[in-house]
Image 1 (cartoon, rainbow, N blue to C red):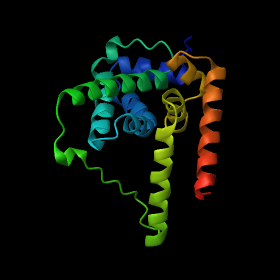
Image 2: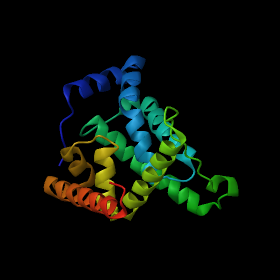
Image 3: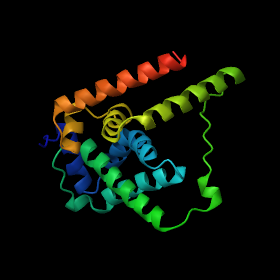
Image 4: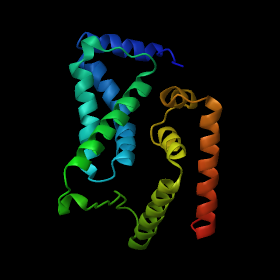
Length: 189
């Protein structure tokens, strides 16, 4: 099942094919943050690998702009490209041993307006939530991240993962039910 591109998507793709940098900038601005979050969910270590994958997708988009064939939405196309590049990166990382400094993840949210105790509580809750999301079944986790981090619609997720819309709804329901229940049991809510 594929979805027709929206008129704005068609406009951007046509302008991009003609080498219009403003169309590329608009697509970059519109999708970069969500694509990076999705790449980080697929490639948690090292963190710069997700940035590399996301930048590589946009470089390829620009390089191949004249020959680009997007069957569905631009968002679905870009998220699929991120997924495939991330899996390629994971395969590559399995073949090469990690260096000790690559294994460290230093995450500090930019919440300088919070008091130290609030910042610590925020970091603990954020870490706990990420651990709970990692405990979700793989397909449920993917659907949840595409919808929440990627801002994809249920229809786009169904098309991207080749499942029914009702399956997407079921995965989202199960993910939210699990996360709410786990947060409530742990006393985080």
